[in-house]
Image (tube, rainbow, N blue to C red):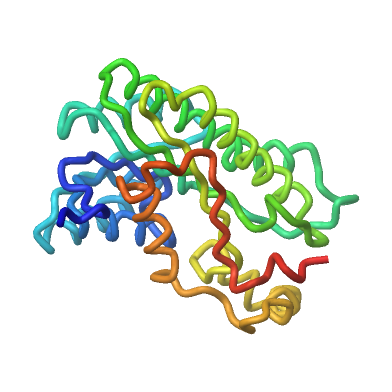
Length: 255
């Protein structure tokens, strides 16, 4: 019986691939057969991830991509095309987070959050889709939202709005792109400890968040592997516009 989770022959590009969840995504996709493009604003970090994958016997390259700059994203996809061919799995993993009272969020705070989390996700997905359509390759686009795109928590208004936008974007693209053989789905993680979130989760405020999680802990990076691989592979062939929550039940109790 064929393995429905096998993605051998696919080309996967992961933004934010230089660390945290993004680096883990790169490893999972490579281990299951994909040729991986590690895309990150920090080129040294992306190189480190790619070189580690190559040492393990996988095919991977690093590209410097700033998701707030459309030409930078285009250049990353150009490099992927020239090395491996059309990207058929695009993961919008780049993101930023900050805690701040709604009354103290400045226009600059707001714009910076949207530029990475929403605008960057949109541009990455749109460019990936345009190239899949042009190549008639089909593919899978996986956006990374958050449980706070579905629920809300105090002092994270601009973050929650950006991630809610990713969810609606996912659904809108899912409707428009499916006739071109492109499925668009999203993962909505709860609290996972990464370089971006470790400071927040270690704070008094972060501890109050974890205290609300029924499992009473943050998620482990490998606990998102199954959802990622499901959405990237033919195992989810009839999933389109789905939002998978991986949060230890946090969404059940967020006020």
